[in-house]
Length: 246
Image (cartoon, rainbow, N blue to C red):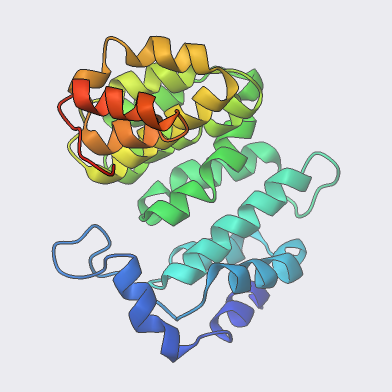
């Protein structure tokens, strides 16, 4: 019995479907085109996962990650995060070690196909896993990812490194994606640069100086969001993006 699947689908709320579908851009030509929703908000999904992850098997996760419904895929990913986080202390299920969790995640990146699915799973999994390992896989995802979601995984996974005071990979992967055509990558890069700047403002300024004039506007705005207002306006003005009231 797949308790996780049963419990998450039981929380379906038709009244929320239209709003979530619109928020996650599921219309024709949009980045989430064709995705389906049950109408379940993230806090509810987290509650279900908290109650069910201990009895969730790899087979259960396979069934959930294959679902056409966004929230079921998210539940699978959040359960995987929990299993991974507890794997060192005790074996949750046979065949569910930390390595097994990472292998599962990387084998199903085609099902991690919206920004929330990426952002809520990649750095608690890949980021943590790679803290003491070679990180070339993130560079490969950023450079050669088959989808913008795989490329976003490469960037956002560095959040864990930032939280440990390690900023080099964030700046290096930002360089790979600096001129990416998609706005969702611009936002991700700018967000991670901003987070790096919270740790080391001087390092962020040093990174921006030779690049900010050619950065996409959204990326730059996100990156300098925590700078003093006058300084933000100076960056935008010099980059040709200045707009009164920024």
